[in-house]
Length: 346
Image (cartoon, rainbow, N blue to C red; front, side, top):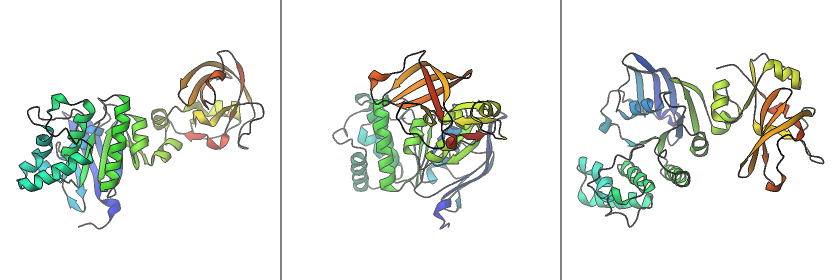
């Protein structure tokens, strides 16, 4: 039995294909006990199939999956001690909220008094008190997902897997429920693997993000590491609104030299110069530009500007919505050279 919490879940050389089409190959990673990991990537990159292999709902062609030092690669799903929440809720329509939550415990032949105690605890955990006797058709989407979460938690799993559980919900409910999932995960110190294609979701809930593309884990790191230091062009394009310029354009415009093919510039690392304002000493000399358009994103104004035949996205704090810069307005841009990131092409 492993005592190394940093390797509570260990995956080595994991490969999976369907009908000869490779989904992923030779994946290696570890998950610490109590860690919240997000598998982030575009549709079709293999993240849900990987989750199903962890759950025992799919079997890998090669490789091993170990939990707490024990190889579970070929163990039956119900023997793994893993709870899973699906995008589609997968509730039984003829069962009440309590009945749905209790189902797994009944299959385990848990005594009725223990079932009642644990169901009541799970209902309280996901804040569904007063809904115990309702049926799924009487619940909102958010409530249904809470039932699915409670059903997974009531069995007291050692690992919780979440397969895009919030994608069918509206934005407000998604924010509320993801915050609640994160709070529950922290309170229970529950090892969790979460699948999403939503960058904001991944950034707000994760201890670490595994960024996936075409069956590969492109980059692993904390949300801050992934956002501030993308490893290649794909990572920069997927995780944020990075501006990407060639090394020749970076040299021509900013005097920035690199051997890498591309230079990534965050929208907030470009300043629209304002008289009397102070800027980091690492900024470039002013670069003449022209505003093409703007978008109001709440507390941020996102400008599209053109400088030396190149277009850039620039994010400025919205201190006053009455001071938008109109299309065609001439501006001077300052680039924070310390925050430019050289990249290799994907």
